[in-house]
Length: 293
Image 1: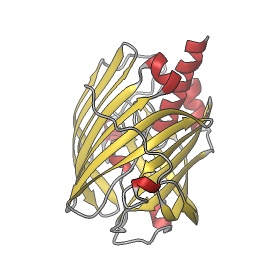
Image 2: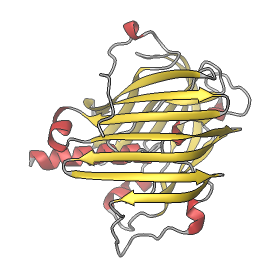
Image 3: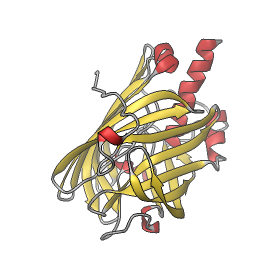
C-alpha cells in the first residue's frame, strides 16, 4: 500500500509538471536567462502538500539570440527511495521576438527499472526528426498525432524561456499573455497563460515584482481519451505561475509554479535564482545534481 501511495505521488508530480511548462520526467523546474553571453544556474525544490518530493537544477548559456539549456531532476525522500525517479534534459535554439525557436531537444527519464528517452530535431518550429525509445504503446483510445500537430511547436525545456518583444518591467502583463504550443515527443498540448495580477514578493531566492499568471492544460493529440489523470488536468483551474524578469528585462522565467494534482498541490519554487538573493541569504539551496546517464 505504501509503495502504491508513493507511486501515485510520483505520478501526480510528473503530471502536474507536465501540465505547466512540461518536462516529462519527475516534477518540473524552471529558470533561465541572464545577460547575453553569460552562463548561470538555478535550483528548485519540488513539494507535494508541503512535503518535499524532489529537487531540480538548471544550467543555461545565452549568447546573442542563441540559447542552450541543461536540466536535471530527481525525486527525493520516500518518493525517491520507492521509485528512483530522475531525469535529464537539454534543449537549444534561438529567440525570435517574443517566442523561442528550438533546434534540438533530448530527454531521458528513469523510474525503477523503466527508462524512456526522446530525441528531437527541429527547424523553423517544425519537427524534422524524432526518436522515442521505447516506442509509444498503441492504445485504442489514443488520439492520433497529425502532421500539423508537429509544426510551430516548442519543446518542454525551451518553453521555460519567456522572452518579450523589446524590454518589459517586472510584473508586466506581457510576460504572461501567451500560449505555449508544446510537443514532448509523444503528445501535443497547449498551455495558455493569462495575466492575473502584479505583486511584490520577498521570497527565499528573489525579492521584487512578479507577474502572476493563470494557466490551463489543453490536450490536442497523442493523449488517451477518457484517461482519468488527463481529464483531471484538462478540468484543472488551479494552475498558477509566477514570472520574474532576468536582469536584462528581455526574458522572464518561472520563479514558482503551483498546480493542483490528484494527490494535492504540487509547488515548484526556486531556492536559488539568477539575479536574485545571494545564496547565503536564501533559506536553503537545493543540493547540487549531476547527470547520471
